[in-house]
Image 1 (cartoon, rainbow, N blue to C red):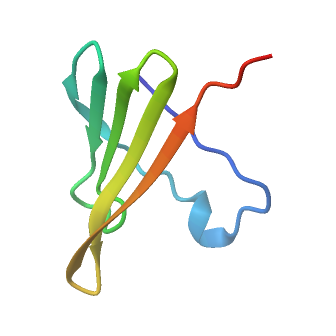
Image 2 (image 1 turned 45 degrees about the horizontal axis):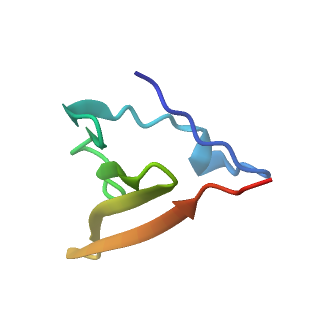
Length: 77
């Protein structure tokens, strides 16, 4: 499985591709890890409901553990 994130205006350091290996997969969660990457070294995609997805980035910065959550809700039209 391959997940690719794109953003406008890539800078030189962003052109290096980090390869995250799928380490856990279930009906509601997928975990990708790349211990060589400082932050994030772990990506967690978790579906808490059919309309809600939580993306969590984990790793370390300056030797301290850090995480960042990105909750996403399905938009209704």
